[in-house]
Image 1 (cartoon, rainbow, N blue to C red):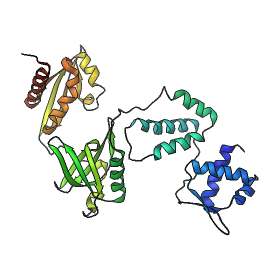
Image 2 (image 1 turned 45 degrees about the horizontal axis):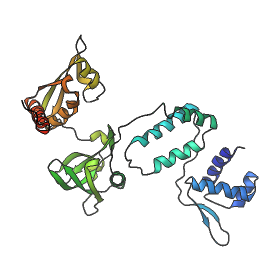
Image 3 (image 1 turned 120 degrees about the horizontal axis):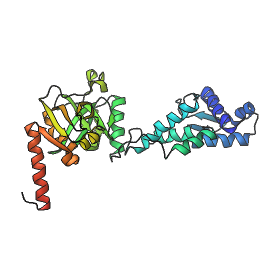
Image 4 (image 1 turned 90 degrees about the vertical axis):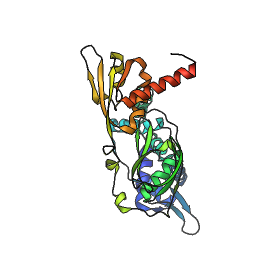
Length: 316
């Protein structure tokens, strides 16, 4: 039996028995106690929660009854899972702490050598990329703890007008374009709000604020939309290059109408409060995108142009 197969089988036995001695495993595998001791040390280093029982009748036990049974994967499944987990490394922070990296290490460790060779060859050629955004792992982990532990948190949030402190009950976490977002019920506003986690300066579990069971039933499918707010049509004329650049942006792509010459227009229904956000999205396109409406968007573009002229000392 190969060592990798022996270690996997050993995990299954340990998981089933919960408590055991080195001699038990030595008899089971027909190996010396020295070899079994080395195997147990390696399993411990890989994160298997084994601890020794001192004194008469001692041996080993699982620290927690949380091990999962081994699962068999096809080669294709193994490669797909590896790269799915590997892609998490491109995020600035994760709400899972170091667990994803540890799991990936264990998974890779026990793969057959030929599958490892294929993965090693593909590592620099295949990736599920996400823009790197710096944010606090502690904030993400506390929010996840609140979601799973059914708790309210007090956050200090960095808004355009300054820092704001509020009590919120998170309903979930999701990521988009490298940013993590937390839809939550704001106790002060008495409504659902969406918070970008990199703007949360501080977060703490607050057991003094009552937890609402009706909010707890909500999921990410219930995250706040802005249909109840005043709506505007954000209208942009695009050159051929502008169309090519915006087609990769999911906020615009479904709403682009291409003309015969390759240029196009984009008409997106947005909340009035998001006008500056959408202008900022197309600002890098410069002359390849012209904002036609609404008038508030055009006014915002003109203010940005005036600010740039002021910075660089340009006159009209």
